[in-house]
Image 1: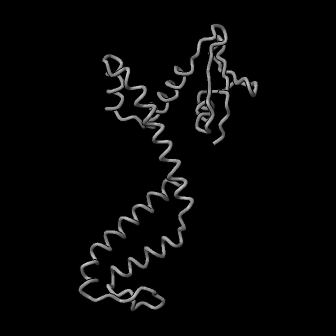
Image 2: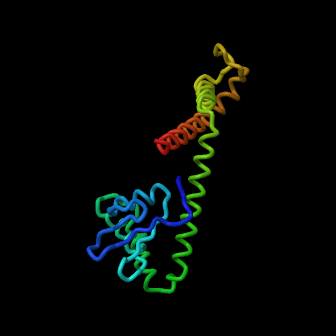
Image 3: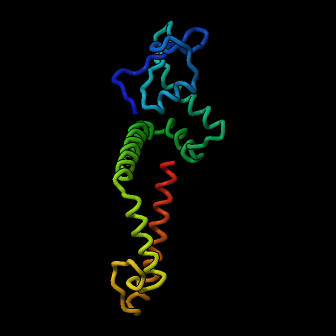
Length: 181
């Protein structure tokens, strides 16, 4: 993500049109949302009064996405936000939300970092070997296998556990792949 030190300055004219001061052209709310998704900070100010309108426009972008059916905020969260404006939680909520989103960004960053270090072929080979072991209980009998055959009683006990492990690993890989796409 491209991040710059100073925010992109957007000026709102009396006609309510939004003007990008870097490119000297008019922009839409969707353009502003795109800048933000690309990692750019924005600041929207009223040209005449100099008032900072950033919060108002960011809320408008969120409201438009929600009204188009792109529901990211569950009803109970929206309800709790409304409640927090009328009680003592108001002082705690902004810090809680900021901390929560920071933790989310860090987790996503670590996940991407971990995904880049995974060797998908080695992971698939290990899953295939574990699957064969679970299905046969005698992995050593398969050609090319480097794992010695186990006693039938030990293999039978581990079959259920191995199958559960395979299912979990497969679900984890599917989740990681879906996040990458």
